Length: 215
Image (cartoon, rainbow, N blue to C red; front, side):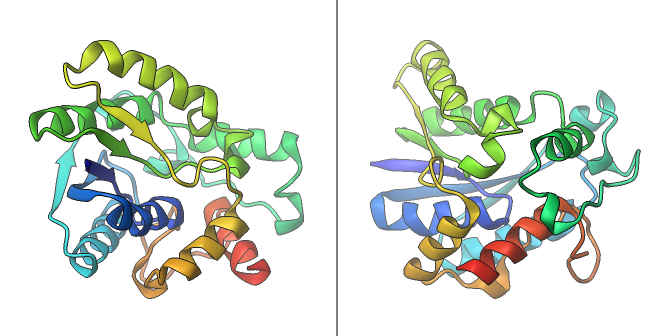
């Protein structure tokens, strides 16, 4: 089996890449630059991870996403900062999710990856989702994966499938899986910001830190 990995360089997609290279021939890692403030750091992380696993890497520019969006991921509004003890508070995390929501981002990225997959005779697209954020991000959920696969069964002649090895795991379980797979932790970038070091206070940083502490 051959696949295309959507790789942001964050925890979920990096662990999915580490898993995928054991399960299939990974033809390409794709990283999207859609104007997010962390784009340069995500691209650097994805490029280094792809080199580590000896997989070709390509950046896809999708500037129109920023043009039609107005979210904190583009620096248009402040990134939400919440205490770690609020990560399981559904009302707080719903508000945080709204602040960083990019309209149909995962839908667009998966369809772009499916174009590459069909053109390269690959049977699947691999993406990093998780149960923890699936509670507030509907495009991280099993229902989303099922719906996308129903769509791809019509939109690709070779029946490309969306696969996520982390879909039913929380962040701590994903960290545990990454450790078993020997993930090079120094190469990943999970922060919403694009500074020299992770900010340590955005929701993505907090979830990673809690998972590392618990894992």
